[in-house]
Image (cartoon, rainbow, N blue to C red; front, side):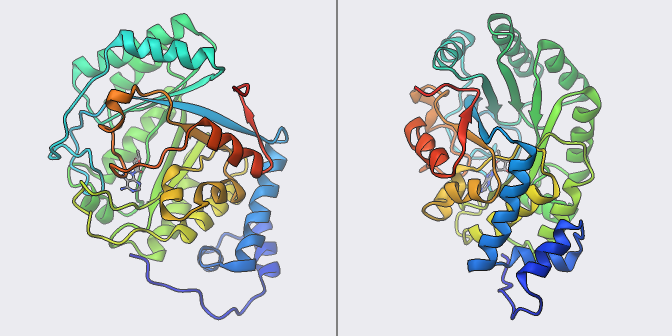
Length: 348
Ligand code: 5AD
């Protein structure tokens, strides 16, 4: 847990933001920004939005619909309720109901879909995922397909790319090898980063990111995460705040600090103005209005949970069984309140 608290200010927020604008992302500057609260935090967010709006002058939010293909997972993440050991009923969606969902999403104007699953590198599953992508692209060539399926082999990533997938999200979770192995004992950071590099080399548009407020994580670890983001050629970046889901091994750990996560998002935006960055529903779990605050901190992507059939929705409890997933109307109101509009999706 991050225990540091805001210190007495030695430098005005104006001069701190000026040095950020000039590209000084020193450890000390980043630390001060991560600890900002109140009016200072509002000024940090102002700069983040100014950077976003200069890079994305249409003031649009990318609207994604997520379809949770399967909750079968081979990993043993201590923070996740879908870990291999969890006594969750497992499912893999059939191709026909999946396509019915895609038809529906297309008909209401969605043009970006996120196909997500537990980490499963079995030959059968990857072949199935490739079939799904092929069929989606055959029916709707202009539908942008993002995959989030975890660590796979180089050849499996190539197979999915050739099937037509456009983008891939693979979070590095933590830049610290020891934290990574503690949180995710079935994997190593080296392995994860090798997968990330494969995805970039193969030509996907790639997204990655971390979690903030995790057990054992210090402020320096979070700053290292920010710096790692600068080392990869990415089109998307993201940060979630730790939610102690009821069914995960870390269920009795404290929730992460939402303010630090929001400040982290603002810094990601300032450092990387042209990347897509989501505001996630876990921010809302952390505090009321948290997801809107993510847009105010520079996010420009919203994921709508309207792609997974009801029968499977409760079987994909990434953060929590009581996952807060706002519907379209709430998302639309939130986006409007932030001064942005939905892109790639006419209002319904
Ligand atoms: N709290 C916050 N983020 C989480 N994730 C998974 N479990 C949690 C949790 N309990 C994030 C991880 C993962 C992504 C799908 O969700 O970063 O890669």
